[in-house]
Amino acid sequence: MKKIHQEILPSLTEGALIVVMIIAIMSVSMIGFGSVPHMPIMISILLLILFGLIKKAPFKKLQEGMISGAASGMAAIFIFLFIGVLISSFMLSGTIPTLMYYGLYLTDFPFFFTAVFAITAIIGISIGSSLTTVATVGVVFISIAGSLDLSLAVTAGAIVSGAFFGDKMSPLSDTTNLASSVVGVDLFTHIRHMSWTTIPAFVLTAVFFMLFSSDQKAGNSGISAIRDQLLDTGLVHLYSLLPILLLFIFAAKKIPALMTLISAILFSIVITYFHSTVPVSELFQVLFSGYSASSENEQINELLNRGGVESMMFTISLVFLALGLGGLLFTTGVIPALFEKINHSKNTLVKAAGTAVGTNVLIGEQYLSILLTGETFAHKVDEEKIERKNLSRVLEDAGTVINPLVPWGVCGVFITGVLGVEVIDYLPFAFFCLISPVLTLLYVFTGWTVTRAE
Image 1 (spheres, rainbow, N blue to C red):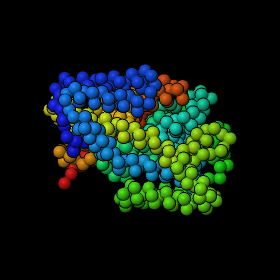
Image 2 (tube, helix red, strand yellow; image 1 turned 60 degrees about the vertical axis):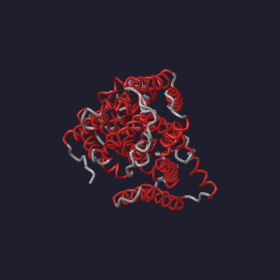
Image 3 (cartoon, rainbow, N blue to C red; image 1 turned 30 degrees about the vertical axis):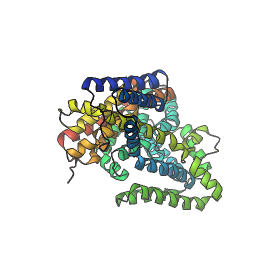
Image 4 (cartoon, rainbow, N blue to C red; image 1 turned 135 degrees about the vertical axis):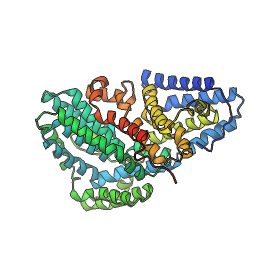
């Protein structure tokens, strides 16, 4: 957003009023009426255009600001498109089903809550979707906990912790790609830098759940049934894990994310023909529209029916609208007006963390917490000679993982509806989501792993 020209010089009061109105529009639309974020963003764009016109800004300049904002996300758009294709190819090659199949064997681990956390983390990384993980395997674990008379609140906390660890660290996750792209950081550089906070948070979370766990094993006919159903798909093969190995190798060699994704897609397609003879016409259809499983088990279908270019259109359209909104916020001078006040405080990364958390709490939407915070502080870290990967890490540590802790947030409402456990009940046990922002602030205050630009 740095290149967008400011057309208006609003007062701090005007800027604050506009922000309050946008927050109100977002909150009422998404919380009160259950709207997807697209519609309130469009209403907010109209509000900003109206504000600009009242302030005598040329409509052409407002339009250019909005377009410039949206154009800044083009790199992310291409990444998202190839992510959709990668997920489809990982389904066809059996990569994701195989990861799930072997991951579920961790239920033999003697500590139930720790096993739940570990398994949901593995599956979350495999599919890159926290909410899908919660809605499928999470439901199974809640049922198992009920049958074993174990705490549903602690179980839900373990499910949420694992699902959002996977969402945060998976190269298939839209929030992970969004956080890296919005501030112009390579995807795998972003994931590696997040490891400094995420791995300690993972270890601490596992230890905490061991303290809560009983000695009952999590083995259950429900888990066995899922394993059997996965095996029946004919997609579970050890060689199907090779594309994951390729991703790790390319990431270690710091090969650009787009090249890594394309290579993994092509490799996965080749592996598909080791166990299946998919017609080319069907292959193209799956890569575009996503994989469609035909299992008799609806949970298996929920897990495997995903991917494709079409599946990314929701996120892509949201990115365009949110970045367009961000462009208008700069063009109309709203963000600069607020900066005049907050620039007097120190530590940009702390302000970014507070903004990400605050956006989640006030608006209840994790995408916007990442987008608006990233757009707002990207040029500030440049000015302070802080590498942008530190900001992208903060966006995830204080943005992605906070939304499930907000009772009126999109993720919080969804999880409560699916698991039947209130946010306020599982919140104290969502250790990973609670630890992550604490660790990132600790690192910022101490300066540890906060790298400086040359």
